[in-house]
Picture 1 (cartoon, rainbow, N blue to C red):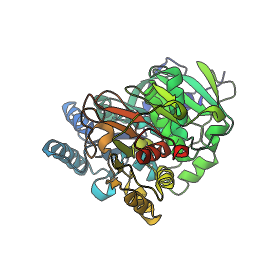
Picture 2 (picture 1 turned 90 degrees about the vertical axis):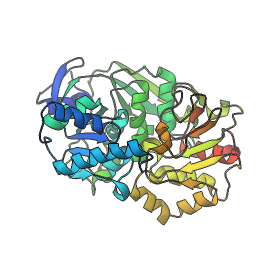
Picture 3 (picture 1 turned 45 degrees about the vertical axis):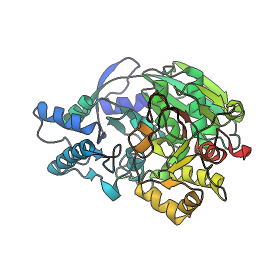
Picture 4 (picture 1 turned 180 degrees about the vertical axis):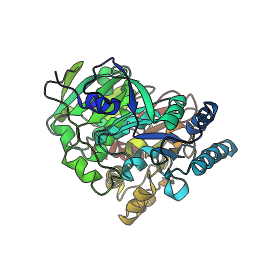
Length: 419
């Protein structure tokens, strides 16, 4: 019996020829990641266990991105703690200010994560890096502390669910719609502690941005990780970025899966997740008349240059509805600069948008777009739990960048073809 791509990566990092689902392993970590919310706790625990030095100053990465630029005294103190630790440890990868960005876009962009890696991060959306063909998963801050000290992590090998998307994507359908379709199908706990492997012609046709989006939201189905098999698009993406030599894995033809789920991609419409769970999905043709007050385009899910291009193509020559606050947040300085060079920022400004600095901002209800009681937002973010973007009686509707842009213009949930 063969192994899945996830099992192969875990076996290699555990120093074993083979692993099987349910097996407990201790594995070598390639990258250990923390941010301004989770790293301070990890630093305290790192100190508490008597650790003096991180296991490898090139492999521990700290990125303040959640409450930055610092929104208040508490967030400033948290970042100060992380900054001082990074400097004391001589970390190679400490990014702040004009060098920082949303962590899960920044790390692949800078080549810090490469195919074949085992990555842990004290942030649930660390699973984003699976788009590169890496095993990446979120952990708690205490697990991060141990990994920073030892370079190892304890894991249970997950079973794998295989999702096969046949055929071609319909117009305006992107990776966001595919992953929302999955979550709507299997539920927010449908892949609990399982690897989610994405494959098929429609996945192969996706850009790397679309694959990052899908892997990013694996956690919203309870997944341990999301992963795509590396191909020529992957190789092209990492070619001039990778700081280390990639290792390319693929599942064996006779690998065992807990379940194989197949979809006809051509039948999937742009999809919207209604409050208050990502599984509460509806195709755009069935969203009804839902007035919105805010549209957010950004986040580690959909704030890459490809996402901004899509949104700008919808907004070109149009204005946001007078009752809608349109917020656009490029995810890294490089994305910001590219959007500026391509004239995308001018399009957003002409549409009446507020353009924010690279930050998580409103995604987690941090800042730069908090909702008041009774307000509704359509967002390209990844979660729409109660109070996620502000007041407990506000609502968040998850959608792709084209739908978010079209909705901003219409003043209600709408697709580009409705304009």
